[in-house]
Length: 392
Image (cartoon, rainbow, N blue to C red; front, top):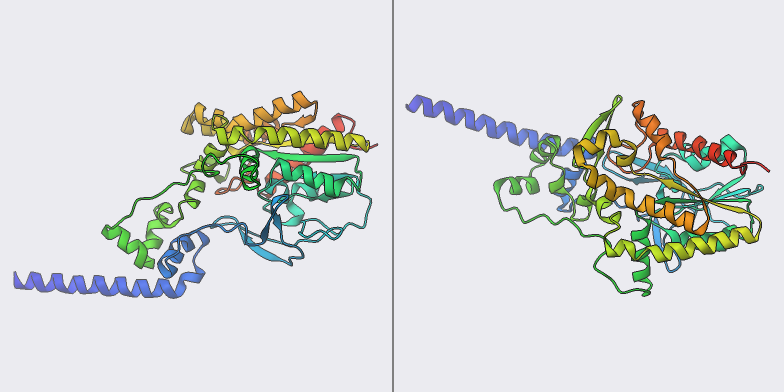
């Protein structure tokens, strides 16, 4: 019995020594580990939970909400634990903020306004707006600003597009725009707040052994995340962007079903509905202004990944969840009909690519990846060509 106890003691010592050496080794190797593990490593080493900082290179603005800082040069921005982009900005005509477009020393025929889907979370050359310009040969200015919505889009048109009088203005829409118009109206004091823009997902205090290890052991955090428990290392807000489901698409993987989209695209939520009048007013003003200088306004809708891959997502997340995500897109289509604005919904065409096993969105982010941008560009200009709008 004493011999057995001796051997157990030796084994325990070796286990503890091995664990200690592993912990020390991983702490030294931490910077070399893949991005997703940095979520847990950051929490252990700094005590700060992970939050994607998409406003590091932006500033608040009374007319637009958020705008890009001017004259950025090859800065790197993380958009998820696995994905980062490098971009630069230019000021245009003495603007106080920056744009992700090339300096304008050419005839401008097309202006694009929109949010991060037109700013593009890709390399500059992979962005659908730049590809549109290259593929059509039409001088194009990209005025898109991440995190903005309809009120900002109209003001971009009024301030920057009107002096150029381009014959085409493309207004890109995504389903969170109504929610963002609500939030911006609250900030400007135009409506009373109905709570925050989104309801965060709070995690209860964990005083278990596992909770202690998550806060103090890099080795445990790495193993925990390898088993899929990223949630515990994120801020309450960042947890909104955790995708609980995943499916294989061709040779790739698509994650989906995050809480953020379910909240901001729910048109039964009064916060989102309250943004609709601001969108209607802004779109109406834009249409009148563009037509006054002899141009044409066209809205380009961006569907969610869940809609594009509905054949794969609905059996997992359910039809009700998909209908919730479809609400803003259908609302915008109805608004286009009401205001007699040309509106392009590429959903059925993107679904054709999805059924061929092509992964058009990032695995762990809601934005179009480089392939998705490459697919979108010709869909847009072919649609414009079908309406006789591409060339004069």
